[in-house]
Length: 456
Image (cartoon, rainbow, N blue to C red):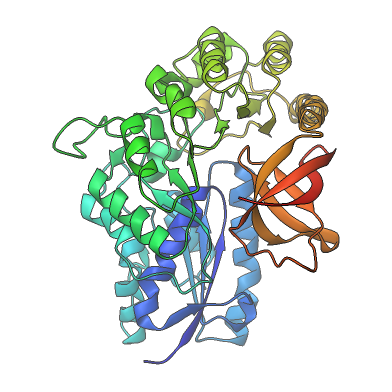
């Protein structure tokens, strides 16, 4: 079998990162091996995200550049997968005739068949394979994610495990239910088997993935008895060899006391939680169809901090949602001051095709959105710096990731902070090794420290 080179450009979230790894696994039996240089690829695949307009624009820009690659190498195959493919399939084919393949979010499993047909000289008409938006994806396809041959990419101690697909929440600004379909959860046994195989292959840091992991097991049977996400976390945590366990993403409306208790009762569950709030205004939250109030959110924050006082809390914020007034935005700023998030991802609202809010009146001007975003991010940076200074003179367990900037070693704390520290000639550090670092410096986005001699 002839070896061919595969280059995947991944846009967006960890779900897409995991999907890209699955694609690598699917194409390995066909002789495709990943390469870091796009110019050496026989197949270039863009795994796309359409959650924001900017991400979609980047995809079209790169596709335009790839036209020249195709002209210089007519045998090159170019494909588009993921959410932009799902949402814009026909438009991609019309605007970018040099694209050979367009596959939707649940049809990436058809890539080997489609590429095989191209290899055999068969014409693909249409060259688009999109999963119907509202069809629940087959359980066998999701379960197959954990049963593929290992990825040929370099081994990593950090691995993602998808536990569910889709979303049933239909937030008014979001395209995920339209691009990834309705919620479906993988069977518990399949998830546990995949985690065990990843640990056996050297993974020690496991992140469980889903659009809303809190609702795991609520829409389909995953075992011979009801299983909550907290139940699943406890079962995964019992697998020997895992040193750190994480999960993302969570909707506050489904955050139960049972799940919050896990932070106090599961030793390897990292004290870091990303809990998107989106706005500090009840009026805007209702327009977003988020199904909780600011008081509900603050109650859950209080519960989390009661169970795990050292929890580092992150969030998502959308500024300039249609109809957002100065008063609404001030309420978001007030929430920031009250919760004092360790970090946040904040964005200007943008209309997305198919999202209900794209038809809302009272759009906020780009100038106002930019001003509000700048103000929010400036204050968040100040709070993040103050939060990070709270770690000064403390000793943190740091999992080594590799070489960082300026010759320093880069690692990550259990609270998900980047930690930079000098290595030593006497002690070679391996990625995945956990060391003790005394923190003696803090920036807005990372910590610096000194490696201690104690081994753990």
